[in-house]
Image 1 (cartoon, rainbow, N blue to C red):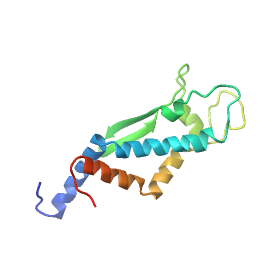
Image 2 (image 1 turned 60 degrees about the horizontal axis):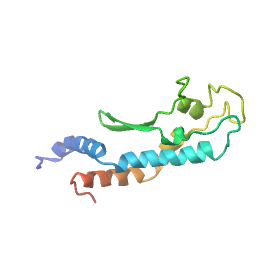
Image 3 (image 1 turned 30 degrees about the vertical axis):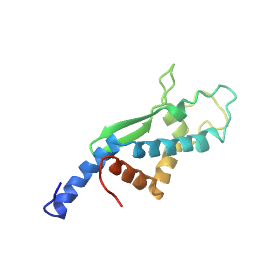
Length: 139
């Protein structure tokens, strides 16, 4: 593909990065794996439940959706019986069904995932890998 000028190229780049993120797996996997690390360190490690047994759903319930400019990765964990949004409860420390040492205390694993990805080069490295996977040479 050839471009008339830099403006022409600049218009094409968002399309290309979206295609790379949709077709590749590196960016998706980086976000999900970083999220899982924060579930472990921010949610599971500080507290061992006594009233219930962990199902591991918070660690495993991640989804990826296409957006206008790329992808959105989010955790979909909800209570099977009530449908309650477990992510919201844990992230913000609200709407717990019972009192325990971490009820009403936020454990912001989503916020911490975002912060880590913002300050690291993980996403740029992942996007480079996804671009390479669709045949784009990246340095």
